[in-house]
Amino acid sequence: VRIQKRVFLTAVSHLLTRLRRMLHSRRNIVQVEVDTDTGTELAWTLIDLDASCPIGEDAGQKLTSSYVRTATAQRLCSHGCDCLSLRSRSPALMSISLFGCSAYFPPEMARQQLAKSADSDGLTWSAELQQREPIKASVQYEMWYFGALLYQVISLSFVLLDFVPVIR
Amino acid sequence: LVRCAAEYRHPVLDTFLEDANIVQKSIAQFKAFLSADSILSPGDELQVIDIAKSSKRADVRQWAMTYGTFCPCRDKRLVYRLVGLSVHISGTCLLIFAQDVKRNNAPVALKLMYNEEEWLREQHMRQLENGQLLDGKHVVQLLDAVKIEGDAGAMDSRLKGDHSYKYLLTMPRAKSDLNDALAHSRFAGRNRGQVAKILYQIASHLQYLNEHCQRIHGDLKPR
Image (cartoon, rainbow over all chains, first blue to last red):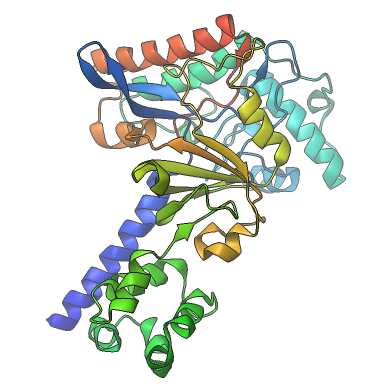
């Protein structure tokens, strides 16, 4: 019983370590204590401005952690992965959201990144993906992210965008 | 210490026990033994540290209590005590929690980066054109931003990543993040008031950035 208890505790310890790493992955909306007239209270705020840029300048100067090489995307597409919106030829559905990735691109940025990635991989994508106009930072660009966030907080089962059927 | 390790019977510690005479020799050799990545993973290191903290030997306890102290500058003007393992490693950065020893052990988050441009942008974007800093109500402020003098990965194996991190940003540690709240509090899609409150707060931060500061966040994500 003592040995099994040790094995169990060790397993729980490893599990907690892994869960901790998983749950505390990088997110950009955090809860902090803020001072108020009556003391302090918890409020949601933003962190990480390494992808930030002035409105009107080129957006996406930092590759987000959801960056994926074209070859990987093509391989996933060829495996009939329905939840990978890359399969769709519709620009409106071109948001990249791959398994294991924590961030999302607006569709126009997805096209740009795929085209860049295709170049470096020596692969060719459809003309639709060859849009080379630099994406400019705008309020609309930011609102795409806010819309994705809104979807997540009003979803009943905390649906991840990765698993939203393309048809939606 | 050896007895404790034997009692613990963790498989990884078998290697540790096999070479247990190292512990008898000197604490310096013990340190070298623990920092050898080929023998113990960072997670297992921490378990050994826990054992060492209850050692009868004062020098072993002392070493265990200060294990993980990270000084990014040679003059030791910044001293952090690392807490646990890194909480995030990506292609761009490594994030780990720590206590800021010079600020009364205040809980902080250390963001180690290897790309100087992103490190500078993170600082630059927190300043308005007139030199004023962004309002801390809308964006978490930086406590420190320094170039790391030396190899962070060599200072502590938990700071090793795909790259050799050269730049450090220090921020106050948050109480929680939205992903945790969504996963554990089960308010998504259920508690209209709470959802509205969160969205309102985030929208006001974005409005401040977009309209007042004329910039975008560019990487908003709950998870």
